[in-house]
Image (tube, rainbow over all chains, first blue to last red):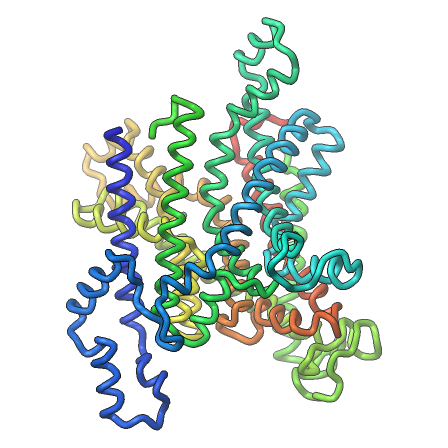
Length: 303
Length: 278
């Protein structure tokens, strides 16, 4: 329990540091959002008034304090262009991104663990070599180069799935597949190595000598391998989140990714800031959760 | 001496081919005007847009601006290879220095370097790069900065761990007791033991930088129009009219990444003392 509190405090501290860093980096940047919004024709007075309205004329430390006070109330500020609360914008766009990310993580874990165990079982046989080669090849495709090829093959040539729509479950097939292919390959490789390492351990011999069935031994092995697989997921999580955002822009899905890139294109700093802070917080929460799960699965792992 | 495995040799062949191709292309483009594979300078004839590969003078066809695909690919190759090498070398140097200082430095140096490493490490990499690029605007220096900032903490973590291990060894302790300076210790003891460890990560890191750079380009945040990502996002828009563009660009982008991954993977097996020959 004491450790949980310590970890929570640590995570909280990191998030505050992260927010601070983002705040100052954005404000260090050259260029003024106000003159961008009002355009080059705006008079000095207009610019000045608008700055005052947005609170940009205050000294930096005061801006920082107000920003933090607002943030503690869950208020991320409002978009410079859309005149809308950033939080409500993010909330509306959150579901597609999470559907994509969670679905692909879930599928990849099952697929990767199973195929990895199979590869370890058939070590140095044809299946193992083929799966190693394919997984290495799959890892070499960046998401944004995999996605158009998949769209071309499955949506345009074979007409199995729609090109870019959102709303039904079958619209999520291609985006999820693009995310599953690299993620499951990584998990496959880790699972294979971990499985090989453990399958020659003495405790496996003992279980077999006691007369446990092959399947029972297999289940025990999978359980032992789970923490390393979850750790890989934790490390890959930022890539999955970013990947979900990238595949959103390719498949025209109204998620956090497309929000972020609209924000970047319009130089809408509050939105960019908000999305990045939000995904960092989620990232840290999941990281926390995975560490906790690992300590539940394997009591030797300290939490 | 272990036998060099197939992965290493395959990776080296692919990378050597690409490096020679890009150097050769640079030399050829600079010193021999035009080229015999595609005798057209980029954007010279707008009318000839979207010619499929294999037809006439264009070996790999043309893109929407009427540029020869082979030509923009080759320019993109040398751009992304040199970028990735530059970024990785800077990142590895910063990482080693910070990692070393976070062990042997003054108390405050240690705190600051540890904190900055961890702070950058917890962020999703590509998001930091996106943030920096959206702030600095699309410039070569900004891109370089964004990529280096996101790459060095990984190296620093490894360098720190290895420095900690080495500094605790008996012979290092005695060297310190005799009065060997920190600088000399760094070059004679710490560096030689860090470098082989970092080699695998360095190779994998280069392919990571290539992917990050292309991702930024794909999202419209690249530093050059010859970034492969920028080209691919252009090709994606004409997927229906010219599917060959996407396929050629994607496959050629995979080549260096795969070569580096193969090399890294093979090196890991090769350097790992636990993996006896299979």
